[in-house]
Length: 182
Image 1 (tube, rainbow, N blue to C red):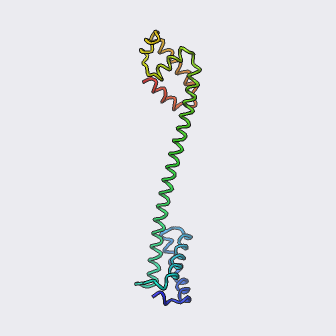
Image 2 (cartoon, rainbow, N blue to C red):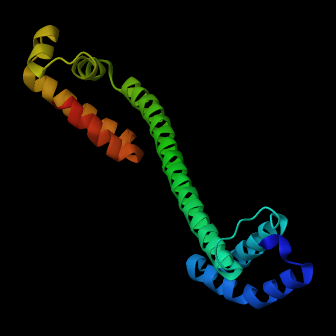
Image 3 (cartoon, one colour):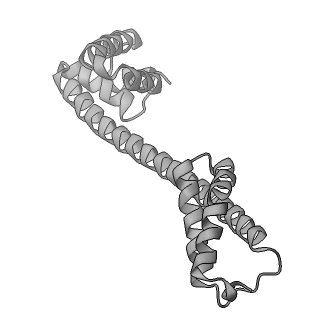
């Protein structure tokens, strides 16, 4: 049916239907430029395949159906694209936060070690036994042959010092202190 369309008939069809087809496409896409691109694409495909097309309805009906289907495909494609973009943004944000966490963690570990190294020797020994060896105050007191009260006082002083040294890492420090007091 379409193979009998002359260039003049095609031009007439284009002129008579273009605006209506663009309006239909724009209702689906809410983007006039994209709507015009789809309508133009439908007309190009129509012209290029005019000899092999088997149109079982009116040409006008065929064009409207083709525009509608192309719009739905475009919407589907845009939705997939947006989902992919959102997924990528989530992945990037996750990777950035993990990297920042690792960086902050390594900076914090370095800062903690520097602060521990600044402690007086006896206080440092008590702190290390508590923090790194996991000994309870009673066990530290027995091991060093000192009173539990001395261990408590030294740990309190060590923690105050650490807090002042690590104030920029306050949130991480709170987690660190909670871990020590367990």
